[in-house]
Length: 221
Ligand code: GS8
Image (cartoon, rainbow, N blue to C red):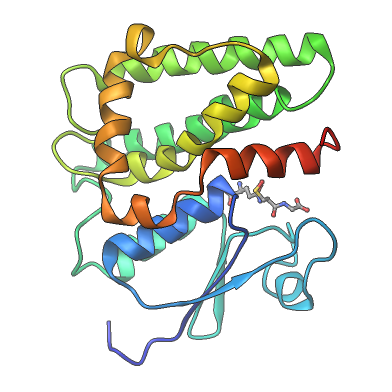
């Protein structure tokens, strides 16, 4: 794409969905203006105008045109800035599988993980069970591979990486230990490798800051 592209991102620093997009833009080396939304008190008129259906971040605004939903934004970035490293594999079946796992991470990991933030015991236990089950499923698919897509860091890695900064919060508020090294050794190695990437070093919030935010959000602080 030409250098005069105008790229803006409406985000929130600890949103796993916004972080997906930030990591993707960083990995592709795309310059953009980041606009932080105040999700705790009031959403901006710009967000309501750019994502009138869901009124949620992240929204990528490319030359004035908005794209919402993190998985769709990642695909859009991959298509438009196709000169950088590709996030999606070229084979249509492999592409479909990658998108399946991106969706799985939202539905079976991020959303159940939020149940752990609550104070209802039964919901918390259900969230913990689902998180452990989902990590087990991902562990199986990662075995023997460097990244979820194989040899290179791609779409599924980008979608999963932001979840890393929530594990500490799951453990503290859920009062349990995930024990990655023993139970999920492939994910343990993958996390180590991801944390060494420039994009992730730069963007992933500190786990203690995330815990404080979640406690503030859920009024536990
Ligand atoms: C989820 C976005 C979302 O939940 C995606 O982009 O992949 N499926 C979407 N955004 C949240 C912040 S992260 O928890 C959000 O904008 N919440 C504000 C609200 O719902 O009012």
